Each structure stands twice: as C-alpha cells, then as structure tokens.
Length: 205
Length: 395
Image (cartoon, rainbow over all chains, first blue to last red):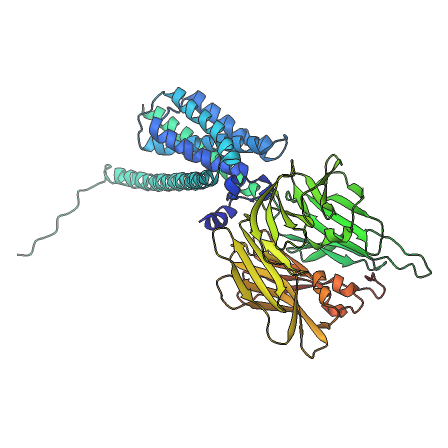
C-alpha cells in the first residue's frame, strides 16, 4: 500500500526525500508541505461537514489569507524548516476547502452555524498534532498520516469535480435560458395584429 | 432576495475559482522544486587536456555540458593530466552538485570537494579535507549527505562530518566500531551505517546513524562470513539488505529483511567469472539491480552490463551494455557503477573509468548508458563519451 501511495502522490508532489518525514522509519508518500495540505484538507472537510461554519466576510478573508500565505513559503522567499512547511500546508488546505466548498454548500442550502470557536480549536489542534505525529510518531502514525493524506487528496478531488459539474450544469442552464428567450420573442410576434389562430384540420367524414 | 442570492452565487463561484487556481498553481509548482530526474551527472574526458571532469547530461535536451574539471598536470614535456578519482552527486534539493576528487596516485591523505550551484545563483564552494586515510574509498559508494552535511570516511573507524554551508568539520572516532564502519545515504535524508566486526568475528551490522549524535541503531545483522569485495544494497526504508558475494567459489545474492527468513539465490553460470560493480533495490523493493562484469571460461574478453534479480525467484534479467572488453582484472568491475533515478524508472551507468584502465575498453564502448526499466525490452540510450587520444590513465 505505501508503494501504491508513493506512485499516486508522485503525480502531485516532488517527494523530495530531504523534505519528507519518515515516522517509524516509513517514508511518507508526500513531502512535509503536501502532507500538511492534504491532511489539513481532510481535517477541514470533517470540520465543515460537522460544524457547517457560516462563510461570513471575515471567515472568507481569513481563509483567503491562508491561501496567500503559501506564496512566500512555497516560492522559498522566507526560510523555513519541516514544521513551518507542514503548517503552511495545513492552512492552505483549510483555505482550499473553505473556498472550493462554497458553491456546494450554497446549492445544498446548508444551515450554517456560528461555532467558529470550535472550528478554530479544530484547526489549532491540527496545527499542533500534525508535526508531532509526523516527526515523533511510530509506524502507526505513519499509516494514519498516509490515510489522512489520501482522504484529504480524495476530498479535494471530489470538491473540484463537484464544482466542475455545478459549473457545467450552470452553463447548460444559461444556454437553455438563452435559447428559451429567443423562442418567447418569436411567439410574441405571432400574437400581434396579423396573427390568426391556426386553422383546424378538416375531419374525414 | 433574488438579487442578493445572485450576488452571493457570483461571489461563491468567483471564490471557488480562486481556490481552484490556487490548487492548480500549487500542484504545478510543487513538482519543480525537487530533483526531477531530467539530468544525469557523470564523469567525462576533457577533450583538450584529456583530464577527467564531470558533465551533466540533459535528457530532455539530449545534450551534455562539462560542469567541472579539476586539472592537475604531471611534469614532463607531454604534460599529460594526472588521473583523478571523481565522484559527483546531486544534493537532495536538486539545486547543487557535490563533487569530490583526489589524485589516483596521490599519497597524501586528503580529499577535495566542490559544491557547485545548478540553476541558482549561489557561491561556488571549495573544501579541502586533510587527514583522510585511503581517500579512494570515498568514490566506491554514494556520498552520505544528511541535512546539508556530508559524511566522509576518514579512516576505518573514523568519520568526518563537513557542514556544506558553514564549512565546519567535526571528526568522530567510533571507538567500538570493530574493523571498519562506512556510512551511506538514506532516502529520507538520514544516514545508514555498515559495520564489519574485528576478526575472528564475522558478518556485518547494518543500521541507522543519527547524523547529529553519531549514535547507531542496528537494524539488521548478518553473522555469516562476508566475502571480500562483496557488494551490498539496501532498500529505501532500510528494512532490507541485499548482499552480492562470492561464497565457496559461487556468486550468490543474499537478502535479509526484517521479519522474513533470509533469501538466497545463486547467480553463477558454469565456467564463468562474475563480478559486481554496485547494486541497489528497485523502487518497489522487489528486485535487486546490479552492474556486472562477466568473463566466460576460455575467453579473453569481458562483458559488462546490468543485471536485475527478482526476489520472487523469477528469471534473472540481463541487459548487455559492453559485449567485448579486454578481460583485465576481476577488480575492474568496481569501476563500472550505476545509479537508479528517483522515480525508479532508469538506471544510469557510465564506463568512463574502464577507459582509464591499463587495458582500456574500446573508445566506442565509452559511454553513459541509460537503461529504461519501464520498457519491457529495456531500451538503452547510449550517450557517447569521447575519448581523447591522450587521456588520464589509472596506474
């Protein structure tokens, strides 16, 4: 299974061994930053499904900042070690889930809550536990992290797919609406002064 | 209400697009920050001087560039370049090359290293390490680089740790190391060690070395006697150790894995002499690959190639790279070494040093061979290494 995950994550991660944790001697399938991203995304999905936080302006601004934070660290403008890489990944994961989930929660007409404190506690716990597990955990921690990363990757993939389908559905709706609009204006012309009711078909005797 | 909803929908759609863009940029950027197997570092001859240098072959551009050339001219009218042992490696971040060299016939116990930036703007660093006994052993195995520091064997029981950034050197004697201890790189950026006990004890111990404290944690122990010149390999996690050795005049592969019984497989065919350059595990850990030299009985020629030994008993696969080279000595196999790419799909082998031997290979056989392991018929890309009329020779 770890070898399969290595192959799968190779498509989205450079897997630099120097930037990869190996809890219990088992090299994880993705680098520290990607681990943070995918595990963070998994945690964010669970928190969103449980708490359904309201996407207020402040909530969105904070998560937008999480996305922007990746720029200076992802492009190595600032020095960083393993922990900082992972933490920026977690925050990025939370930002992605918050933004990518918006059209879906709107479509599903979720009843949002304001349990932001619980949400923040979940995020903080993730930020604290992930580096500890990855750096000092044993083999069990390695398997757990592999599972969470895979779950997070799948969650992000599902979000992207769902958004794409919604976008496609919206596009077809627009096309249909545009087409129907053209049809309505034609009928209006026929019901003008020169319109006649259609002649009835003669019946055979 | 409808207008508010439309505004919200537009906002949500726009923010979702932002999220999608951010994810796309991240995924595209992530894979370019790491060693990407598009370039191969290998030794070549410098046309003008005939000296050995290091070149980089770009697999996409199909082009080689000489990147490093240590010149040490011997005295005399000809001024031929003295032979150097050279070994180069990419650092894990893919942004620097680490190259070590020493004069082959130099009696000084010293080693020179160069840290050369690749694709980035950074200083070119040169290091000169003295007090390195038998510096030639440095070139038999990949450098052990862990956390920006390289570990060099300074003697049978001593290691020098050089900080490539600060230039600081720490020497550490292993007082209880037995006969010899050697260090090797781990895939996760750490270090492994192999320790041979003092005679009459036999066998060897393989384990993890803490790059900070030099403390050792044994992982696998082999108690049987290990033949001289044995070649060994370890897998990415350090849970498996493979040994290619001669036992009772027969070459065999011995594989030790934690939690599994030892696996042994004979490799010799009748009436032939088989020797190995170096070996490694495949990416999946189910095959041991090794560079080999074979001399059939009654023949005065040697064949060199790549051997793949499945650990499930399936037939051994050989890819012949040099069909007819001068027989030379059994120890010539050590000069024919390969390296597995990070994605496990290619083995790169060079025959440069075989052209420096007393009985050198033909100029047409001097090349960088890239063996594509993902292809069923093992396609080989041969990148010729031009051999000047006057060139370095190992004496």
